[in-house]
Length: 188
Image (cartoon, rainbow, N blue to C red):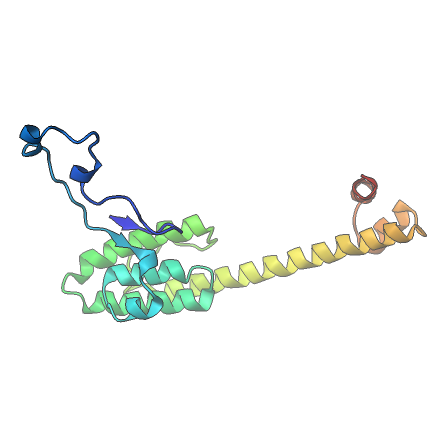
């Protein structure tokens, strides 16, 4: 059982312990024991994961680094090294590559991952895609920041009350409708 939730796993790990009410003693011998092996990602520190060169620790490293592009690239480099050292490298590479493509899509990566078939063989292509994605994210952040600055400027000009909506629209590049909407928001 792989678990990567924010809270630590607290459920019992054997179905035998989950049966309530407890069966009579003559039936307990027939009650199944079904245990699962729990791997709770949050219980491992980055240092502990670094000491375990396994594909799973590499996957955990990617998940933990997903908000930082440089860290994400380092985590991908690490898992590629782990895969290259694995005895069943082709199979592991295929599984981890498929997982990574899905994971990056869930993160909203606007990267061309269709051509990615192997982390080991296509590492350079993935690095380029991650770099492009990071650049797009930075540009989107700058654009969002500029837009917020324009809206703040328009609000400040509305507060001063010295300009008409048309004049504020010309000064900020917003439409008259957007200025009117901001004016309505400020009066409510």
